[in-house]
Image 1 (tube, each protein chain N blue to C red):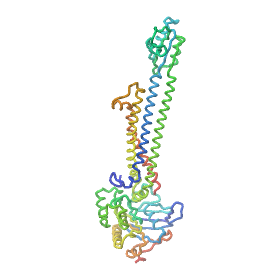
Image 2 (image 1 turned 180 degrees about the horizontal axis):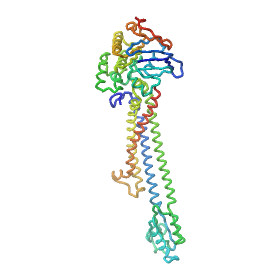
Image 3 (image 1 turned 60 degrees about the vertical axis):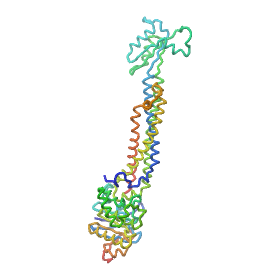
Image 4 (image 1 turned 45 degrees about the vertical axis):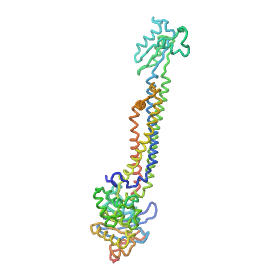
Length: 302
Length: 224
């Protein structure tokens, strides 16, 4: 393709027409917001997985009068143990007396004689993928009437919905940022076209094709957009690292990171791999929007 | 080369500024374009530079039927047409050298050839020492010479000039006419719009006379 001048030249005077300050700053703000939104999408997604795959799959089973014999022979606790062991797609464990004492400690204290209360047997049941909690609860109650089954999944299902809503909101914010970025680039390109109209008329009259003129604009716009995008990313990463460091103990039951590699490791690998996509996406938006805007504008010329 | 059949032109929904133009210019011909201010000379030049398409009629330029041509077919056609505008239409942020080089660069000529050709034409118009000057630093006459150099550097098949001697002294005007005659002799079809009757008398040629947007054709002998 023929060019107006050797690479890097500015035949249409775009360095004067397209501000080298306003557009990069606006794009920097867009990319900053996009980075936060992207982190929000990934964090909400991880939260939803954590809730649904972790505590949300827990079932707490309390068997009152565990030593009482059932009609079939063994006592109620043993009958429940046998049933849980025989049930596929679950992992069950009976809490020890010490664990129960530890749980009751805030209410009953640590001093005094061993507990003389008739404590229920408590089982912690983790449901795997195919387990049906309602069916299991029916079987447990049938085996040992009076057994209490608390299924955490009801609340965690609701929290999962909340997490997915947050995820959708963050994704929507990301889409809005992209649309606003497109609008910003389009307005900047139109402003450049208005300022350089005479120059464009002249080179158009000399035989410049739409492709030549549009590429000239697109190169300049993309350069400014990439500068802004890198600035926005440079501002967003420290903030994301700060937020991730603060929330690290909540997310992974780990102490706050100390060293630099630990701090960098607080961001999920998926986020690290997607952050460089933001400047690339911004560049693509800049190039395509500038090309489209200029070509539509040029179509009015004969 | 250039053929107009019943061509009319109006801007938007306004009145016709050119009406029922019929004209046939042979390749390598030289025409003066004459007429009072407002007669339609600039509008006819806009048609011939492809800045406008005819509102009515048929216009054939260098073998291309303009009114039916696709937009993408017009840029190569424009590169075969050199134009000297009355207001020069130079790019203010470019040097004289780069203004003159534009047509060659648009045509994709190698940079070495561009530098050689532009240097030569700038020497010919007497602006070799002003090659790096920007239009704002040049006088009206110098700007006009830059515009002329830009129009002829690509050896166009059709050269259109709107008052090309308006800001030139007599010596420069004569040198310009010698250049135009030389280009004409080499096969370039030339149309020059002017009010300079002395110039027309010194260089007799076929003349196109516009009156109220209509064309009246006069032979060269009328000006001898």
